[in-house]
Length: 434
View 1 (cartoon, one colour):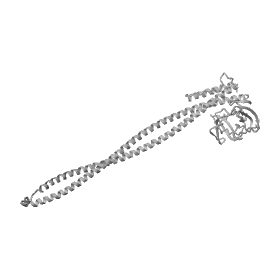
View 2 (cartoon, rainbow, N blue to C red; view 1 turned 120 degrees about the horizontal axis):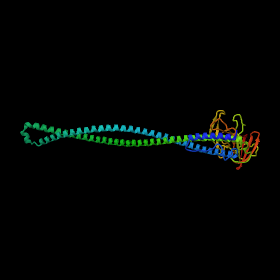
View 3 (tube, rainbow, N blue to C red; view 1 turned 90 degrees about the vertical axis):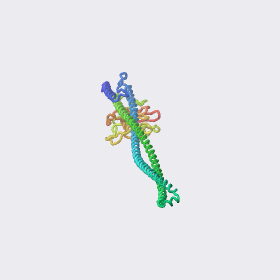
View 4 (tube, rainbow, N blue to C red; view 1 turned 120 degrees about the vertical axis):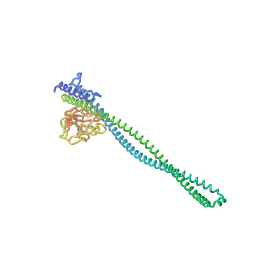
């Protein structure tokens, strides 16, 4: 394909994706070009370096967006937990208020019964007081009459024989009646005092119940205020949760727009390296942005084309059987795993790899690992397009894990192979290259 035509197509693709990006997310700009600027020869290695640099910038931005999305998801979990806790608190508070309302209702009934008992007691005391007053007047009258007859002399009694029996009878009657009246007065007085004492006890109990009711009323008011405060907290946290969800959606839109541009850059780089096979270095010093080959078409029936990557400590490396790896790339932070992707065609979960202390050997959005513990600790992997999980990026450019000195050779088991001798004494190997 003509080079200028490729550049024109990529510019159209970039413009389309840029429009989608600006439409979906306008709060944060991501700028990248999927073709080299006019001051760089599109057929030069500088153009490839430029595209690689653009891709690296976007991938870094993508990692930042992923962290922001993860942070929002964490915040949402935290807020949801707080909302759930607040709901529980509100529920408990409402239950406590209901319990207090029942207690207040019970106390109101007790107070009402006591008020009725006190009123009845007051009526009884009033009746007894009236009876005592009447009895007291009668007693006083009889005492006066008895007192009068008590001063009748013997001569007077003798002269008035006719009235003597009457006087004696009246005197005896008055004496007996006065004794009975005194007893009745004493009994009534005692009963009045008893009723007043009971009335006092009832009044004190009523006062205690009223105090308890007032205290429960205060607790109810405090609980109602607490429920109001909790409801306000819930509303605030629900608002924050809604904001976080909206922000996450914006970040996802930004992530998707960024992914489209990364895919476009992936395509631009692959098309470039396919059109410029002579630009790959075959020997000498290379950096992590130097393309050292392409993923070939060789591979097993189960995995298809893939790259075999290994890292050797260099302590016992003699160049023979150079595909052997004694360093675990997934241990010690060399490469990182970011979830898995299930492939029904293969029947297993393929780990998704990201760069760690060394870079992944592809410029691609997603790199899936096919096999582990293969040739020691070597890995089999291949890049796939994000927008189409089933599309492998055939012929993708291969980059060294770390900078170092490159040597290429042919191996009967690995086909076209590359070895990079690094400054730290390690040796990385790459098999199944075109």
